[in-house]
Amino acid sequence: MGAAEAVTDALRELHRRFAGLRDGQLADYIPPLALADPGAFGLALISMDGHRYSTGDADALFTLQSVSKPFVYALALSVLGLDEVGRWVNAEPSGEAFNAISLEPVTGRPDNAMVNAGAIVTTALIPDTPDAPRFGRILDCLSRFAGRRLDVDEQVYASEALTGDRNRALAYLIRSAGPLPVDPVAAVETYFRQCAVRVTTLDLAAMAATLAHGGVNPLTGDAVVPEPVAAQVLAVMATCGMYDTSGDWLLRVGLPAKSGVSGGLIAAGPARFGLAAYSPLLDPTGTSVRGRAALGALSERLGLHLMHNPALAGSTVTLVATADEPSAAPAVSRGSAGRERVAAVAAQGALDFTAAERVLYALDEARPRETGAVVLDLRRVTAVDTVARAMLRSGLGRLAEDGVRTAVADPADRLALLPGTAEQGGHPAVRPFPSREEAAAWCVSGPAG
Ligand code: GLN
Image 1 (spheres, rainbow, N blue to C red):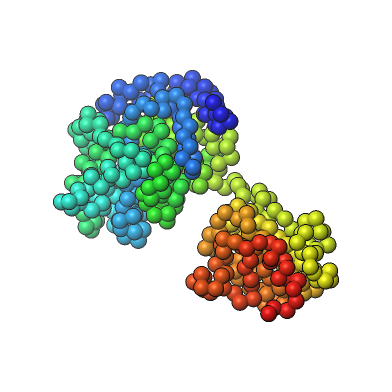
Image 2: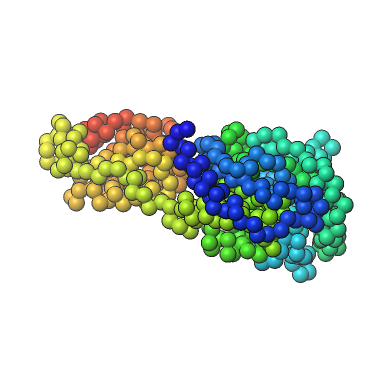
């Protein structure tokens, strides 16, 4: 019972709010799915630090069904790359049901990897070799996304293999239409197996969190897929993951998501959370009724909508001061002639493009009108990404070229300014120092020696 219990409380509150929803139907075209408990309802959230929160039936087992699609797509992208996968599976929203004949006229290429046609092709693209059979690769990959060894519900698999004529028909249509180098008809059995992999709501939250976390499972630290692949998968989930309600979902909920006919639903808040719901009563599009309601409300409550501006926090730049404000820039007055004016800007946290822009703007605002000196204090910065590093180096270099004495308090050398440490080499006129005092002292010490 700690402060973070408040997060579980948010889940509990949504659970209470939507547990009473009785709308929807159990899927029955795969007969064992109709045996699910219609009252089952689990919710889970996993943070980028791997903190796990859940409520309700979050440990109940059910089969992945279509929630497997984005993860197998991730595997295909990791193995073959976007261009090769894109030759065989498009990335256009179909606006159609999950089992529609969503094939491009002439080429027979499926619209996207989230509808069955595209998922079957995606599965077929996974290499199948004697030492690493296709399904083994898929199960390994799904397990790494979940952070534990998953298995197959053989009864659900056998049942879909018996009744899955529509999917088999889709595979035959694809084979008849196109020059696909692999056999989708043979791969359909593997597709049925991946759909029958057993998970819990917490597993799903871990899988979604791994996508949200750039492909690194936040529970195990395992780099399951490369970061660009995670971003590509989230993009296709955002536009296609909810089939013919994808547009409305993106509009109202604003998160990449994927639903499955056993009642599982995932949503990913990139760099924030993996979310999952399980409740088997489905709406007419094959999405969990309670899941849709709960994750929609959660996104709204936590402000997760992607188009909602998350980053207006003013905390990147924590100090802007000049020597005229000695309390804010105490080191500057010490040992100086008192006439030299030095501006100080301090930043904190992780710096990306947006943060770098703020820092550079603050330097311009703070910098003395006549030539003077600036100190950028990065001691409380925890990370600088490559874009921000290049921008800061270039911006500071411009100041130096304008005749401004420019120093950085950068004990961790995050800007890679120390001679010999930067791949580009340090900017000769921008000097890094271990402390703000030393940086400011250099600024007022007269011409560079
Ligand atoms: N195995 C199911 C099918 O192919 C998955 C569909 C779904 O979850 N939407 O029909």
